[in-house]
Structure formats: structure tokens, C-alpha cells
Image 1: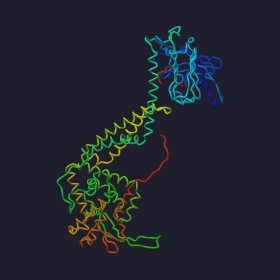
Image 2: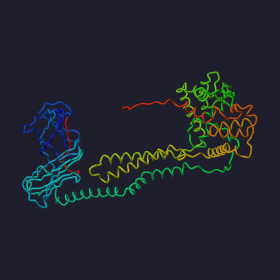
Image 3: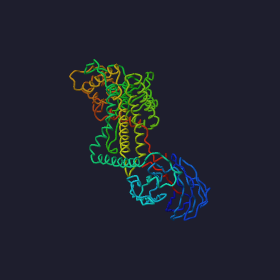
Image 4: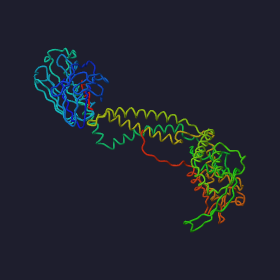
Amino acid sequence: MQESITFDFSGSFSGAYRDLPFRPNLSFDQVKVSENGDEYTPGGNTELGGFGLPGTFGVTGANKSLRIVWHYSATDEQRTFQISYRMRGLAIAYDDVVDVNFRVWGDEWQASLGSLDSHMRLPRAAPVGPLYRVWGSPAWVRGVVNRAPGVATLQAVNVPAKQFVEFRVVFPRNVLTSTAGAQVRSGNGLPKIIAEEAASQRAYEHDRERIDSAKSHPWRTILILLILGEAPALLLVGGVWWFYGRERPTSYDREYEQAPPTETEPALVPSLVAQQTKPGSNEFTATLFDLVRRGRYKSTAVTTERKLWGGLRHEDIADLQLALGDTSVPLTGFEAPVAEVIDAVLAGGEDRLSEFRESIEADRSGNSKRFTDFKKTVDDAIDAKRWFARGGLPILGISLLVFAGVAVVLLSTGIHGYRSAAPRWGDVVRIALGLCAATNAASLIFAATKAPLWRRRTAAGQTEAERWEAFRRYLTDFPRLQEAPPATLELWERYLVYGIAFGIAERVLQGAHLLMPEALHDQSAIYWISPTGDLGSGPSALGIGDLSSGFGSALAPASSSGGFSGGGGGGGGGGGGGAW
């Protein structure tokens, strides 16, 4: 074999290499490198990127291929090198014909090729007839082949990077003078060779027809992809919900509960009713008011002056002034972080609720950690209650891993084998199915974040949740109910605490304003009076929603920002090469 490779150098270069893949029954010897008739000297350095004397070359085996490395000195010029070698075992001699299938250009080349000319000289002239045939492959490479009595030729243009080109010549067996360097196989080979080439062409055309059909029917293709990309995950999630997430009916049938049905703390109840564990600022605020109600802190209704319009106007607003109360009041694990935040704000003295946000923000890092501890201990307390059965989550997790694994395998194999010039239907299908599997995995990730889909309450938890939901409906509806609610001070204060936790404190205040017993006006530690005489209304700094959102903002970690951080196929021969 003789190759002439022309490099168009831009810059300074000193070495190049050529890889020739090893294949079964194929061997190489008699390697030579020359330029313009001057032969290079063997024994040169074979390390890629290494130094070698110009005019030398070396041969080594590397990565299942024979590597030829040669050295020169070139700067901004065009150079043509000749490489010659003998291949033994490439030709296959059948009883009727000799098959020489040679990959004249390998898919290891990282650069495209403008033109490729290949000539195969027969041992002696052969008549142009049925036993003498020439093919070039693959079909999507632009090129032509020709046959003459003594030589077959192949010409190709604009060969893309990483695209192989094969040159297959079949000629009569009697043209060979010897089979010493060939593989000898009994029987006639021409029918099998013709069948292989015809099958390859049919496969190419069939792939193209399928791809064209998918492109010409876009709505059908989109519908199929949507079904494959969502239906498996939706069916799986639906099954998990039916068996593990669907709440079981109970015998409870009351519409309202007129008092808190159990002694469950206000920070825990919203998660039970909502079937999720995501405590936040409402639960924090409710816990604070519950501690005030129980005497851990003392409160006094006061009036605070607020400046408006840059100090041009002043307005009196209702406020609560807190001070440390009975420190012997027992605290649960999740109440302790709340007390730590408030104790730090009060610092042994007293402060108004309207000033709390600024005081909390003064130690944002410490208080945000306490807020995180509060949320975690609420989660732990909910887990300890054993309200929820989580049997569906492992099924979602295992299914997610299966879909993700399938997506990785299909996408990696499909992308690796994908040919942009002539895509194969199998590669397109693998990539499409891989994307569908990835979409299903993403849907399962989303489902895993929605606990009610894979988790249901236990029988005891469901009964308690229904009672608390009835109590929540009562707090929402009682301002318009004809039946007057109980009038004890303790119960009214518990109404407000749980109303804060549920996020409906304003409804409780509305009911208190309409139905308030005198005791709320005179004795309550957590209801306040506005300067206009209204209970919890008017220009008040203690709008519960504003207070809760203010706590949430003040207790959140400080934001941070950053930038980027580092962090055909059957022919012998082929291979690639390059230069440095």
C-alpha cells in the first residue's frame, strides 16, 4: 500500500502520525516514509508531541493499532509525505473471485478532507465483466468509482471529519498469481458479496425512507413522542397514587369542629392538613404567639408613631410590646429555636413587634440558622407523630433510576453512532427513546416532590386531619355563622394562634371584631386594640400577614452571587492521523 498525504501547514510543525487499526488475520510490515523521493530514516521517536530529528520515523503499536510517527520541520507551507506498507490478510480468495475491501480513509481523522483519490492495481489485467466489480461506500459520501482492465479507481470529495470511506474491489480468482498473502476460503464468494452490498444499500434507503416519513408527518411523530415521553411516568405515578397516595375514607362526617380537636401544636397542624412538611414563617409566627399566650413572653398593647411622607405626616399605629415572661414554661424541640430568636431580640429587656424585623436582620446569619433549626425540628416532630405512610416513594425512586439509566445508555449509544450526513434510523430511534426516558425521569423527579402523590396519612392521621380541617372551616366561616362561638378567653386566643398557622388570621380577627367578648378587650395577651378602638383593625403594624412575611424575610439567609467557576464498516485499513 502506498499513501500520499498532503498537509497544508499554518504555523510551525515538526511531527505527524498515521494510525493503522489491527484487525483479525491482518498484519503490517515493510513500513517506509518518504518525501519527494527522499526516504526517512527508521528509529525515530514515536511519542506524540515528542522531539525527533527531521527526516526520521518510528513504528510502534498503540491503542490496538500500528502507529507510524515521522519528523520534519515545516512553517506556513504545504508538504506531501509518502507512506508505504504491506498488508497481509486483507484480500480474501474464494473459488470464483478475490475480495479486497480496504478502508482508504478512517473515521478517526478529526479533520475534513477536500478530495480523496485511490487506485487499486490488479496483479494483471482482468476483463471488465460480471466477476470484476467495484464499490465505494458509504452511499452518503459524494464520490465515483471506475474499473479498467488493470486498475480500479475511487474518487471522493468533501469527506466530513470522522467519516470513513471504503473501496471494495472484486476480481476473478485466476488474476492472482499466488495466494500467499491472502486469506483462502472455499466456495464461491461473489453471490454473498453482492448480497452484502445490496443489503447495505437497502438498509440505507430504508433508513432514509423512515426518517423522511417521520419528518413528513410531524404531528404523528410529536404525538408518539409525547406518549412515550409522558405516558409511562404518568401511568406509574397514577398507580403509585392509587395504591400508596390515595387517602382512605373514614367514618368522620362533621362539617365543623368548634374548638381545636387535639392538643397538637400549631406549628405541626398545617403540615398534617396539607399533607406536606414545609413549615415556614406562618408556623414560626403562630409558635411565637402561642408562647405569648402561654406566658413565656409578656405582651402589652401600645401605640407606635409611624412617619409618613418623609416625616411630613405622622400616624399612630397599634403595636404589641413584648418582654420576657415565665422562663419555666416548658418548650418543645421546635419551640426552642423560636425562643432563641426572640430572647436574642429582647436581650433581657423589651421591644415592640414593629421593631422585631430590624432586630432580627441585625443578626441574619445566626437567626437564619435558628429558623432552619426550627423547620428541621418541626419536620422531625411530624415524623415522630407517624401520621404518614411513605410506601410509594421507594417505587418512584427505583423507577427514576431505571429511566435515568435507560436514558444514559440509549443517548450515549445513539449519539456515538449518529451520522449527521446520513442518519441511521436505529440511531435516531435510540436518541428519541433516550430523550423520552429522560423526560419520564424528569416527570418522576417532579412527582417525588409532591408528597400527596406517593404518601398518604395513616388511619389515625387521616382522622385527626379531617377533624383539623373541620376546625379550619369553622375558623374561616364563623364570622358569618348564626351560631355564636364559645366565649372563653383561652379559646379565643387559641383561635388566633391556629388561625395564624393556617394563614387565615384576618378571618379570626374579623370574627373577634364582630363577636368579641369583653374579656378580649380587657385581658387578652395576643389581641390588640387600634387607636380607633377597633380590635386588630385600623392602621395597625400588626397585620398578621405582614408580620409573618416580615419574619420570613428577616430570617432568610442573606443572598449571595457569584460568577463562573471551573470546574460500510467491514473494510480493513482505515485509521487516522494528525500533526503537531
